[in-house]
Image (cartoon, rainbow, N blue to C red; front, top):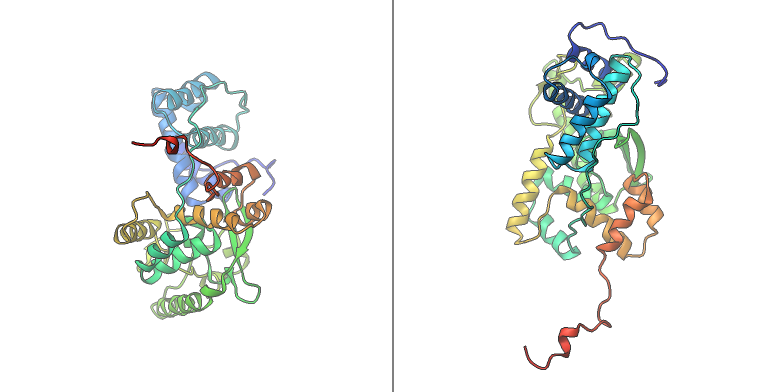
Length: 331
């Protein structure tokens, strides 16, 4: 979509205009919900004044409030800023001074939690079913939680041993490795998804949400097997954007609960979430001698500095370093 194009919403209520504009520019539904929430918070914080009556001062005041009083992460403050800028630039068509001098969040970066290879093996051994396959993919291919649950069947390339990651963070596509060990589990998962899809078609359903304008361009794509989610939800639901009954992908909370339960069963004391598997993937590749630039591409990082954080949690050879405590004859 040409960024110079200005979309003029037809809805009369402001938040309906926001949603309509977000959908015109093909923003993800999670982004839509997040932007709507931040815009509402901004309006409420400012005494429910209409955004047209506000400007640079109110924006700076709200963003500073998030940093000083709410102590939010820098990424959270940036998301709030992006939502407000979208409101003024795309919805209200009002030029906005981008020199926003709000108090910025100064939280330091934290090192990621990483599991050892033995801990990963132990964790995965305590998982079953679809959740186990999801966890295998996160550790084996370095996928984010949302990336793995949003995989479509045609994103799996058995011939070239790669996985296509579409519309990832930053609305970018990339490919990553597809481990040989996962070929059979994924074939079985595709067969399970196909059976569910066949049942949906027999029941008069079978449509799936398509990104951008593909549903208009390819009239049958939304019922084709390739576009179906690799990890479909157990139940059909109504799509909030179209009002149609469809089968969406598995909710990310199912994976979170499965990993949490497996961590306890495995006796792992470290705080571990699904994203910990992605961190472990990156760290273990570096420990195996993989080039950091290659890892940057596999992970989908814009800046190699983001990837470099894993060099701080790699296992290092400390055998030659003597602690001063060891000089004590007695403790």
